[in-house]
Length: 26
Image (cartoon, rainbow, N blue to C red; front, side, top):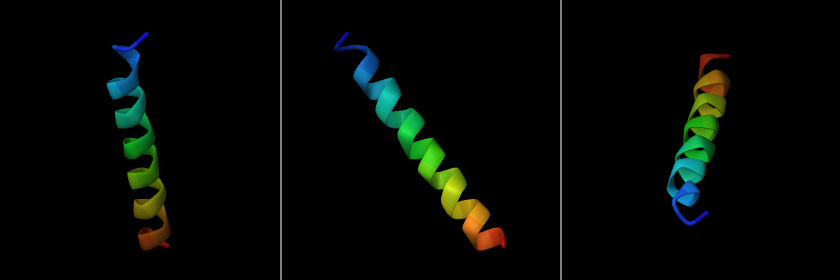
């Protein structure tokens, strides 16, 4: 379970980065 945390954080970070990119692109 502990090993899942870093990948989860990375997924959240990537998601927020995509969100920001979408906002900037608009």
